[in-house]
Image (cartoon, rainbow, N blue to C red; front, side, top):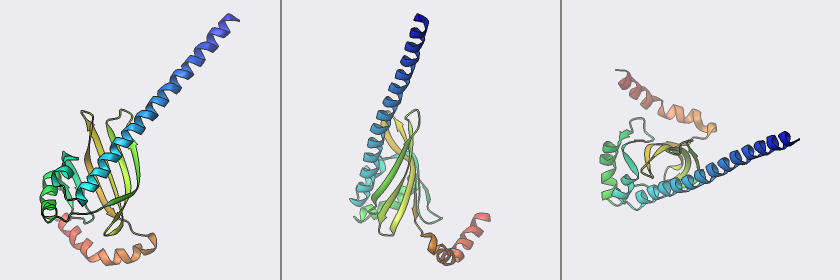
Length: 173
């Protein structure tokens, strides 16, 4: 009988320890997600308030920004060059997050997200990747896309067909 009590106690302890680790992971994820939300919210706000340095401080030096046009695939330096005139004029962009999903890697050093944004273009989607170095989250990769209702996709395809074919020819040559 004593053997069974020891065995039952050991099993219960294992379950308790595992449950405690799951709880710690959930708390860590919640804290990391809150930190990432702050980074992304401040990043969008800094663009709307044309705070150039603060905006780009949220991005790593090797970050990539992909815009809505097929030609818009910028490394950090090129994106800074493209953006500078907008910030200097005091009118960059104003993207307001409406909904956001954040996912954190098991080791807690990488995160990826998707978000819906209220913009001058209507509803857009942003998605990206962040990395954490020295306990600071930085945007590594961001993709901005215009959402297209499925009921209008045929019209959009027709509108962009000519420009797409020109761009594809340049890429293939």
